[in-house]
Image (cartoon, rainbow, N blue to C red; front, side):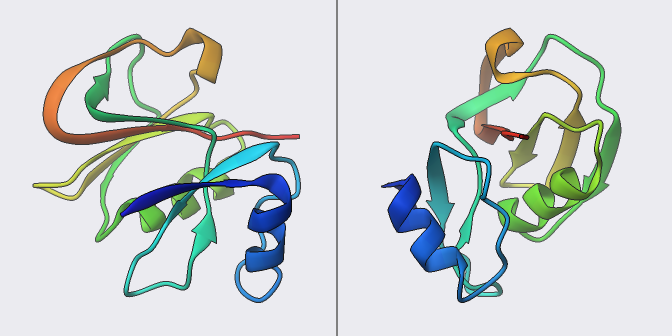
Length: 115
């Protein structure tokens, strides 16, 4: 389930859990049973995959939230896609304005905002 919140709402929620959004103007929130609600990114394409670059890293993760955390910890990562069916997480150094995405069922694309 994905919902969009304002910066103020996102910061209020994140102060009680993993605070990762001090540099965001808007945020997509993902509710994942294995994590508390975590503010994530400003761009999401459902059923798309990034096609404009080679990934920095490919890993298997249990959720988009875990993929996001991996991206946030990598200073070169500006976006990622997550394949829901396989759990494949791909990190990219492509910024939101440069993202190109093609259809791939069950794939989520996120752009991470860095200050």
